Length: 80
Image 1 (tube, helix red, strand yellow):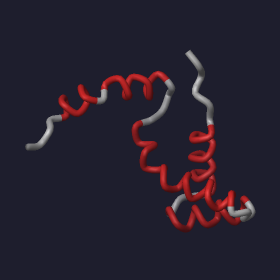
Image 2 (cartoon, one colour):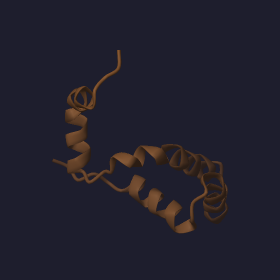
Image 3 (cartoon, rainbow, N blue to C red):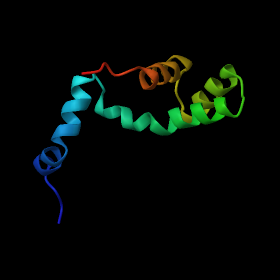
Image 4 (tube, helix red, strand yellow):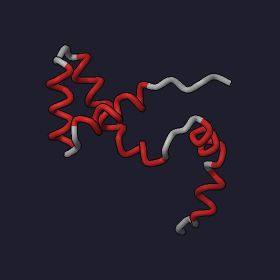
């Protein structure tokens, strides 16, 4: 049986509320893999410029877009 939009939102309302109050865009989930690659490659000791170039080619994004994702994912959520 398929869920309705209402059911999906209702089941995840608290998480959605937290994401919204933290200023996180729901679409950010699309960039999880990019950020994980960035962190992994940096941890392997590769230079940042190479890692950014790799992410640009791998995810077909501009350098500016890659940096925007990295900054957004690194940003701290203000405490309660």
